[in-house]
Image 1 (cartoon, rainbow, N blue to C red):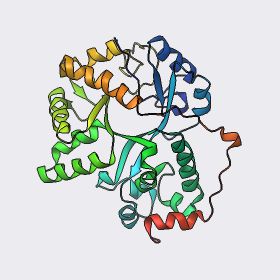
Image 2 (cartoon, helix red, strand yellow; image 1 turned 135 degrees about the horizontal axis):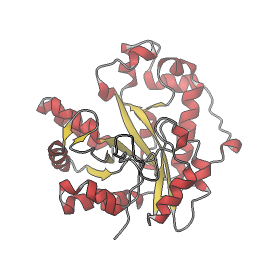
Image 3 (tube, helix red, strand yellow; image 1 turned 120 degrees about the horizontal axis):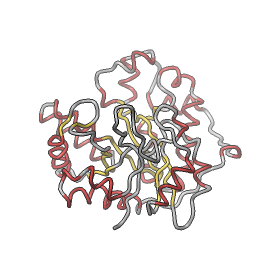
Image 4 (tube, rainbow, N blue to C red; image 1 turned 90 degrees about the vertical axis):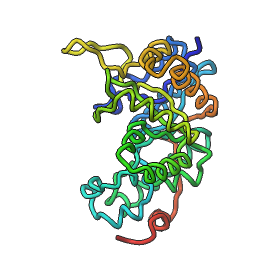
Amino acid sequence: MLQRVELSTNTNINGYYGAVEIDLLIEKAKQLGMPGIAINDYHSIINYYRASLCDKDDFRIIYGLKTCLIKDIQSVLNKTKSLKQYYDIEDSMNRISSTVLIKKQSGMYVLLDTLYELYMCQHYRDAINIMDIPLSMIKENRNSFLLGVPMNIILDLKYCDSKTKYRIMRWLSREYDYVEMHVPIDEVMYDNNYSKEDIVNTIKYLNRFNIFVVATNDVCCVEKMVMSNGVYPKNCLMSSEELLKEFAFLGEEKAKEIVINNSLLLFNQIEKVKPVNMAGYMTCINNEYEKMSKIYEGDY
């Protein structure tokens, strides 16, 4: 059986989210027969260089990160003047939790320059989380990245009226490349009690917009760990066979599609990328404030 590629991982760099050493994670992926694995911690690129030491011809590392992409920074800055108020904005579609995968070597330099530019802009840093990235900055080099949106955002749309749901889905289909779906926990998914029936219906709805779904288990550990209540968390690194069992409720054909076929489809779109040694990386960006001002056009 073809082995899938895990596209969502959390190493010990993430602390609360992950507890696994990157070397152990990559070694386990190789043992499972995966052709590669994504290294995309929350708001962190620190592990890129260590991961590159395991990037061999027969095994490929995909570099990226999990962050929040800001859809409309102007509306955000108009509504708030502090970080605390910013997180209370009801229109959650202005700030979307996203997975960014680097597709080409140029994407590595673009990402580093973008993060550096945001950091250097004190005006921006005072208003918004430093690792929240304006979507406009990604769109300037869109072909250098693959963007994933979590399934729970799509599931939340069931509470919208049909016109609003359709409009948002049209926008998501233009801006994102795939939907990332984590393993359901028992009969529900995430914290909002979405049933497996909701998931099946949502996947059918996504097909209308030619958006494909990729299954992950948002890895934070290598092996199954038994908890005090006798169960184990389902975000350990799983083989294709194990993950297919978790998604068996979708039917054999659809489960294989989202677990194996779609992960390999994304994997094959991504070129071999070399990370930059941060110790030797020097970037020269002039007029940081002026560049950021062009994005949101003015003070608040």
